[in-house]
Length: 564
Image (cartoon, rainbow, N blue to C red; front, side, top):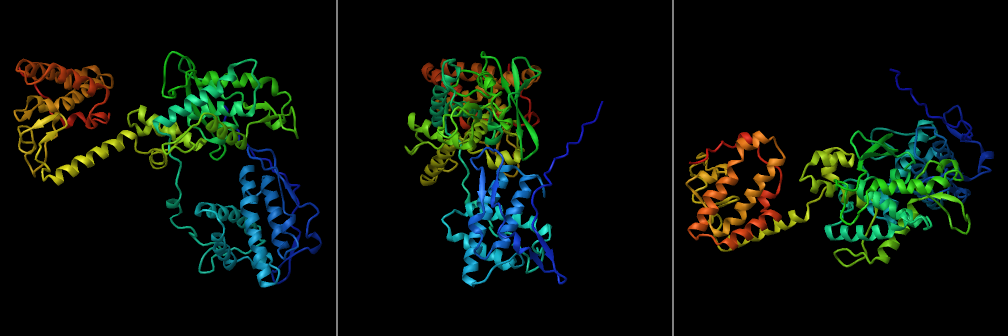
């Protein structure tokens, strides 16, 4: 079997260099004749943003020509693949968010001191001054941190090339260790859509995307954006991998009627695979309320509509999925691909046209990040709290999924509210602990009962033995909890080996029906209507204690013997 070949990244060595020399004392001298350079515009290759060029001309002639010249050349080196491999969008942020604001600050500093600022003047004092200057802007703390993080890599690259002096330790360390402490606490991440918002959004985007299947409908950027939103909702992928989907993104899956959706992740230099059902008869984890057709069918339809456009598309877009003919006045009938800005405009129009509102009656905020969190929490809900499988579906580790994606569900919030109300009532009436209730019914002595641990005042949790315990009591008020326990045990039958379930659990439903319900009806302790109502309520909305599928280990319970 042949080994995998190593792929070497090609770099452009023809990029103009910073014309400089060092004097005998080590002082850096920039050639005066090279300032300013003949070409001050840096052109960016096509990318997922609208950034195509950045002009450094406005920064020349203000006493910071050396620094402007060095930053311009460094941006060009990054675009040519030198000094490390970086995405075009990342280098664009270095120019627009990093160099632009840093050079504006240096112009103010040069004017204040009434002297030019050279590369040799960049030190800890300049960096601290820039950090003090950032709060004067209207940006949030996260925005200020982003500006700093966009200029630091450029300055570090200049330092590695010897153009500026970088002090890496001590009091004169050029870059502070942590200039934005606890910045994560000031950032509010996107929240997943709640059930009502998700249902309204899926219904709206389904209706808006339906023309994709109409052979006479014109394919526009707006229509493709709605299709991309459906794919994002069903797969939980990030924006850039979705925008850069290729025509061969659907791959065979070993399972019948299933395909892989393969996307490329730039940052991880790896592929991301999502399994999607190709049939229409079953609903899988990826199925969402309101969307009736499979995601595979939608993607295949978009690929089919883009096929005749690939021949006339630019080379860098020829293998893309989201292609359409531009209706712009500047570039009419030109084949282009969906971008982030087009997607944002389509989302705004969707929210306005379908009057999508959040819980506060404000326009619903929709973006790919929020749909990704919605997907993760929906999977977590459908898998009944399986964190490992949810993290696998998101493409993260369980720690990252738990910390950054999952939030308490609506049921959790309602259960905690209910618990707080009950606890408050018992504290106000001084009846805390007076009602010896258990999740399976009532108990006359949960501390010293027949199957209680009887040590260190521990409470009995041996619920599998409740039905044969002489301290167990069932009243009409306990029927809801009892049937919740009943249905919980029956659900285990599909989750474990049949013989194991017969050995440890099969007796419980029989004892409940025979020794509790039947006896209670015969003695008229229960009414048939109350029993039927509690049974149905527990089946569809079980008691919070028995709602989770996390079950205690079997060896924690003693096997009860069915009474004669």
